[in-house]
Length: 391
Image (tube, rainbow, N blue to C red; front, side, top):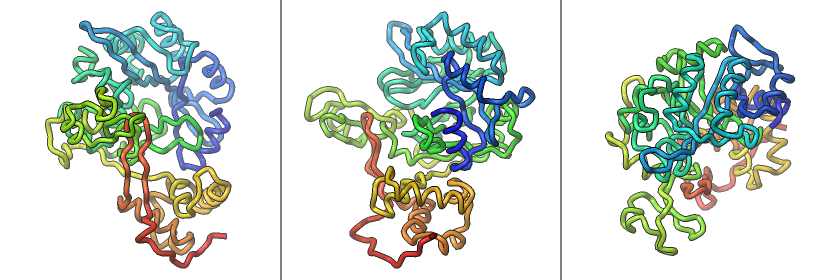
């Protein structure tokens, strides 16, 4: 996860703009200054065809009205000067050198207020807003409304991050979120995972242009998001991982939120929490909603088609060949016409891409910190077909 590695994989994926992550950490900030060129007029950084936006995530852990809260928030800034100013302020609330995502003893309202005082150019995004343990709506440590969390600073929020375990359609069920753009980010911890969720813009590579597109929900400039199937996220269903209990919210309610194995409260997931706070039925898209596309990463499609691990050399070789042949992973998964890739690809890989585009997949939902498992092919139903190879 250094700059050369991120650039290499951004080209493979077809990504033009990456968040740097962790600008609150002094050593990483120093590395960013050494390795990236400043595009001051654009509010971005640059190297080898890839732009970067200075970003970081902080963990706000605090008490409010006698209750403890734990909320992660994303901060983005258009310059190193502003990054240093933000860091100076936040250093009064926590040890920024201890972690890439520092723990701050300040409320969400106080964070928004401090950032607003520093500069209106700063972007503030509540992170993965539904995860149970560390989010603004989390079932175990969050709030029931944005107003309760951010007080009089709602207008300073730039957008909301849906997180891996929810997609925009789930968030559309809450009418009070309609005014906010919903963004999706990959939360990657290795370069291969960048772009597993992403945002698609048709605008200038410019910090302030992107901020305006998000604040105004401009559908001509903010086109759509690329999403995990939310069931694949680690906290979609309820349950206890150690007890091997995985429940749909209806089952959780039947058991009165108590694990039948250990008799302790279940970890309620995103689907439960959305249903708890929703004021709309499923399937309603509010006016001005930004669309989305649900994808499965190309290496996962290749691995399942070949019946091998996604980390195998065979998958790596096939993946590199395909992204070079079709310019990038996103271009192949989203843009290339079916007839154009069907004649070039191994039959099962081509069929896998078609099924993902059509949302014809089977998923065992994730729960209590365990990712869901996704299946494109049914071994019983999918007989062997003649295969064509690229090489």
